[in-house]
Length: 351
Image (cartoon, rainbow, N blue to C red; front, side, top):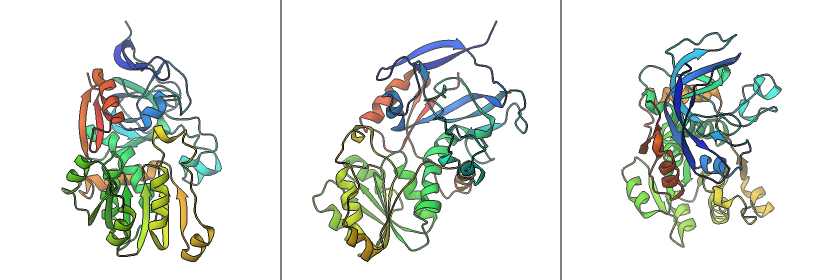
């Protein structure tokens, strides 16, 4: 009799997750079956649920996986049963000019995401392309590795490749109490920056006082742009926006100092249809201050590996704000939608 597993399935876009028992999938050529230990969860899942990232239903969501290799398909070398793994959730080709240059996040032939285009890790087992896997080093908790592979790795990519943070720079993070924002603060500190946390939620503002940030700005204040400039002593070098709202975009660009960099990480699901959420700036302002405006998306496998190293070396600590058993994955998504969690949400998937 075929092995069975528990999974939480999105039956239709916009719907709720349904607890389902199904046959454990078999890995095909070039694929690996992973026994899932845990799966991180963030606002990207709301975009998946609403169908904003494409794919089809029914679908097992979840892309921030960690676990152990359970079986390998034909042609897979280098991975063995029991190996602790996490990995990239982008379905990159591995062959195009972008992949060949180590920038698989910009793969020309990207087919979508694990958990959207193909079944994900809100289950006891998941099948993923072998090329997506990253080994989890000793000293990193298996349960936390999936969160590291997204929340920490995304932050590492921003710090190293996009904002290019160097010691002594003044860096602001808007949405600092969120699942990725709280890790961005730590990564920026690890890069030697003077870090300013910007947040509007009162409970999260209190929690941020526990962290080694250099300044905190209350974004609920009408004067928060001026407060940010003051906190940066008039020279804000980088502004990293995890919200993407019209006010955070406008205030962020205006707050930057000479040679400053504005990095937009994403747009909250509720703002995706807001046509006013656009980048707008006076061209001469950009010219005179030599302002750089850029986007960023996720991280490469190499950056995931380096992010795991940051955690192993004690430079970054994964912040798990709440955890739920697999059967309560819908409750986890609701907590995220209601902005109830400081840090990242984790789904425990092991049976």
